[in-house]
Length: 317
Image: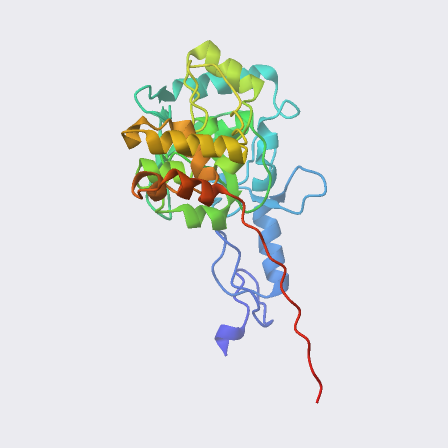
């Protein structure tokens, strides 16, 4: 059948087709030999040593590798190297930072402190959602949020995508971005429709504990907000690590529960006390809705004794 024969262009190849073509280059069926020939013709090797990734020469067609061709070719896994001091000069990096700063406007009214991109945007080919776009001659074309993340953080992984934890796709605040696998990014879609969903699915466990010194200086010198749900910085530039949650002893937990039960209004409960009680296993409904006595509360917080199971003896008749 003609469908089982290689359809490589400009080649009278009669081999059996085993591949579905080269992504973004050729859509026809190809044999292994012609597939490798076409792939090598339209792609170049990544500049990172011992890397097997390849980059499309024409960056405007790159939708799978999404590599960088300027000033050197880099695959998606190593694209952060294109912005490192080993690749570009400090003068070039300063120019990129200046252009990046002019491309967004900080949102002071938002409790998250997003940096909203106001420059050029392009629509995603898959979803049609607009994303920020950034271009400079010495580094080529970048998505604005990927540029903002890689300017201050480095990440790796072929499947890594830069996720917006604030659910604002035009935000370029590096603290609101994280590199996660595509699978996890797909799972988070649709779970951030409101403020509660954003905070619940912020991935606080992966949140950076400390702000990079360069990012802190960049925000401080330009008066930019650095805020996240767990790190609500009192000043626009002050960077603090997230304080650890205090560990409570059973006696301290009982004392807090007693104070809560004696309170006249549930709203009188301090947020830190509520958080500590929830951590100890006392749910919101138990605190607000159920009418517990002090003895019942102490009983709930008292550690349970685990009795050892008795071994059954088997009798052989």
